[in-house]
Image (cartoon, rainbow, N blue to C red; front, side):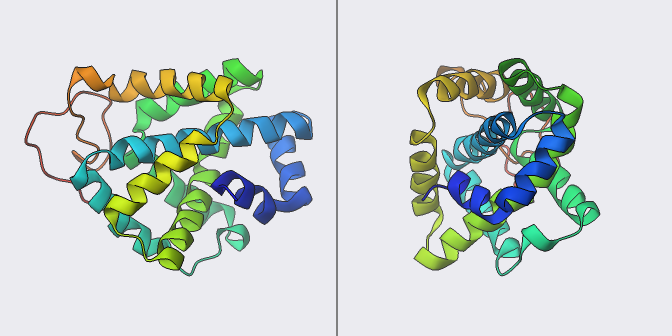
Length: 199
């Protein structure tokens, strides 16, 4: 079962109906949006985890999300946590870039997507933290697990998200990207050797 499948299970029908209402869409479209949002967050984490320091930092951050239940948390606390997660994974401009791309792909508004993404990010983190705890993953194994999650995306969505993430991280040929170069990703290429990767 993928993280997306687990997320759908945790939200249930009522949760998906609420998301559809937030997006102003029907439930099938909300499911499509949710898969894209989850894929973008996982993809951003996977890009971070390609670098050993980034994988170590993400692995450490997951410890703070173990033994928590995001599906019963209040919206305000989820949103605060989600903005922090998205800031580290995609950055403010990167989050806007992803939201705009998903909005264009699915036909929903960018504004509702910018409200949805911070709610979903902590859920993905908590589910991933459960994977880490259940399988006793180290940073390298976590990176492999994230790559497997990406491999389960439908081809058209994988192509879309790859293009969006390349716009944030650059293509592999563009050089290493420092995923935790500050309190929030700026969207710029990192200076080689930068090592400030705290969440």
